[in-house]
Image (tube, rainbow, N blue to C red):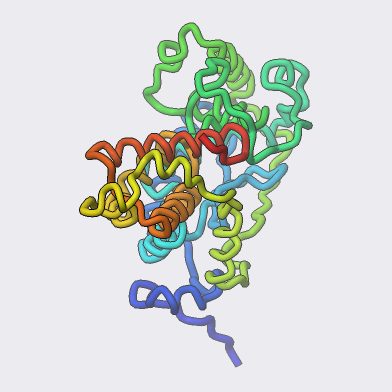
Length: 340
């Protein structure tokens, strides 16, 4: 008797609750026929035009990454369907790689890892002299130097500074970007030496077959049996930092006590009303994920409600944005939220 595969679900018709109960493998997703297809084709054309002798395999996974030692790039499965992108935005407050420019930037970054794996570049003494030892441990709370000119600026959050291999991947991404005059943009920067090294290196490797060409597809979406509910629970826990007690003294500086301004708008209501643009701006300029910033903003809002604080002036929006940005920047630089 011939077996029949399960029909492709109509994801657009499902509620959030119904989607969250589904297993990732049962979503029946593929790159072909989606907006990702043209983006991957454009990316592979860029790679080919740069003289790279092979094209990386792009597949749907559970997040953006390049499997260790492989010449493959995992693209988050939620980018393969608009309904899943909508759910991702609701659950995580943003869709990483959701726009064409963001998606292309991430693909170029991952290509840096692919080249590293395929040609065993990090083993080379000159590579290590320029970028540093690849044996360094990764750290999610690395101490960034926002004004350093030793690193290119490609992905948000000064990501090139997080690890030597990320530094190389970010440098490759800049080098790979079509129409970007990186010699002019990075003139006078120490990072220009890294770009020139990558340019020389890729000139030498042009047309050369890779030393290693693993097509491994780790965490492939079609094999992931986790339900979306568990997937988002894990990711939200990852970004949900344990915040310290929220800062009553600081909040009393930003807002007034109800006794002093009984007729003024409640601070909690103000924050709920203006929170979205503040959240977007703070996340964009600090590089901290929206989910983390939102949790901080939500906790501050709840504390304002408990203290029954009121608006002190028309500049409250600006002041709270600066305050949040300062807290987020402290966290980005030190791994801790600090009292101002």
